[in-house]
Image 1 (spheres, one colour):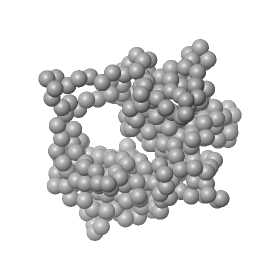
Image 2 (cartoon, rainbow, N blue to C red):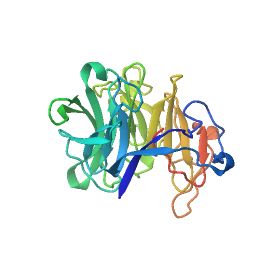
Image 3 (tube, rainbow, N blue to C red):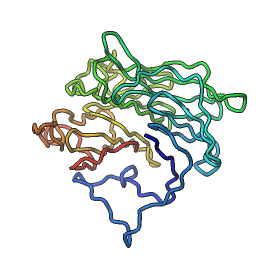
Length: 309
């Protein structure tokens, strides 16, 4: 299937990434006079695009260069002024299965100085297992074919498990230059509440992938030293608001999609609490705060399948 990349010239934003919304199902606002909520202009077409990042330096405008990932493993450099696409070489081999493949793309905060681009993707492991990976390379443009040089893996999701879902692997850089990575529960549920693995967590890492000193579970050492928050399901959006707060969007089970304000050291409840139900109708307790869990700032029933924040 082919998808169009378009500019949203007049956007309807999730009230969210800037301020807290009530803990109740969000309602879709009606467009005035029946008009569409935005207009769009087609720029280019892609197969299964997963993420897009504008390269820093010129701001988000019609002259901005952007990088676009396709799930099947291709990275494109796009001139949004002309629609010209160039495939970027030097991208690592990815495992494409189910929800897995090439994922996020993010420029380092000092891209102007180091030309560093971060990618997340899925790699295979032993005995049919797989896991998410984050790495970076130096983007070379203007000299032949655009390419990533010296690609280096800085984080591997642990443990690798069977199945092809809920990798999450979204990336966001904090104002201080540290890196946040979302690590999904891989459809295993209970590991999201355990501290011996990274599944179902938000992680705070250095730009080189090491746990940041002072993380909430640092005293436990080992793998737990990378945790920023726990109790998550499938975290497909993460972003810093202008006020410096960190927001995250998360797919619930059957219903119960969430918008969360991420606070260090907090437990967001999955799979012990959710405003959704298990597929097939099994109930999950709604109680968050009374059980010591963080409440979502907004949640949706039925699901809206939120993506990037």
